[in-house]
Length: 226
Ligand code: CA
Image 1 (cartoon, rainbow, N blue to C red):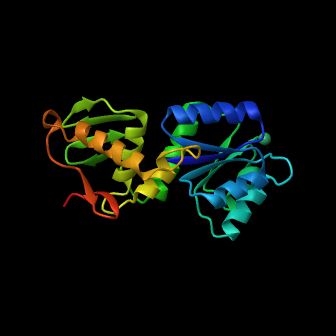
Image 2 (image 1 turned 135 degrees about the vertical axis):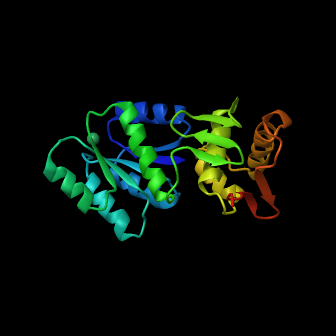
């Protein structure tokens, strides 16, 4: 999951970026509304965390402009004032959800999970396929009830494929959503990671059956269960 954080207070932005990265999100940060608009338009994000109080262009204007431009990325607004008026204005401008500051970290994460779940269609909280279960909240993966040891990025890639179950996902799309912008974008890195991921989730002692299918020239797919 790739998240864009638009927040002008460097300490808050840095803490959010660090915390979200630790949860397996790929994080881009913008320090003002104009930069936020540019970053949101330039690369696809799964969710945007947008502060309302920004210098120059405020969060409401950023949100309205994104929607006018046809960018429908789910937006979680961070409001400083816990007043009904602000919430109404936030939702009217096209935001999907709001969270009053100060917020607790677990609550922020729960809001983000809820937004990305809704955006990608009705999916259960725990993602499953062929005896595999991935819990996005706990970042744990089990196969037939046995815990598997996966790296943060392996969990991210697997989560992305599970959420897209039934649809072929290209290596470029995986790079965009599971690697950060500083990465040079070599699709070979995706192949290496998927190979390693498969060895772990499809190992004989983990159940054996194949889960991630390669579609030649197109990418990867996890087939939906009948
Ligand atoms: Ca602010």
